[in-house]
Length: 115
Image (cartoon, rainbow, N blue to C red):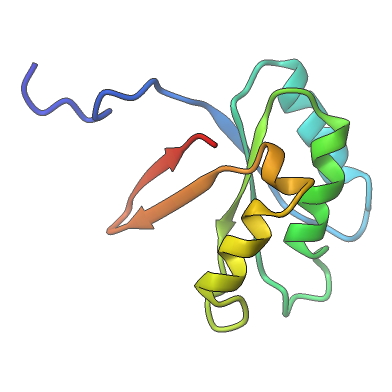
């Protein structure tokens, strides 16, 4: 097949969870639902300067133990406030490292790698 857009990878499905501080249980409820329904990924935007949002990496570390199979990733990373080396360290630190995914986005196309 010519021009295969999946690059030999299985197609995965997920949900975008807004890290709202109010109501605080919103992210957990949606992540648990995604896990129960068999989705593969939960993406959470990382905007540490937004006071209405919970901290993404702290939130991921609290959601991993509440779910069974779904993998988490920050679907927006703020590089000026979270340099790449800091992101890499956060990704590999337990408990988020257990089921955190690495996501690279460039020119509008995204690829996700399993851990």
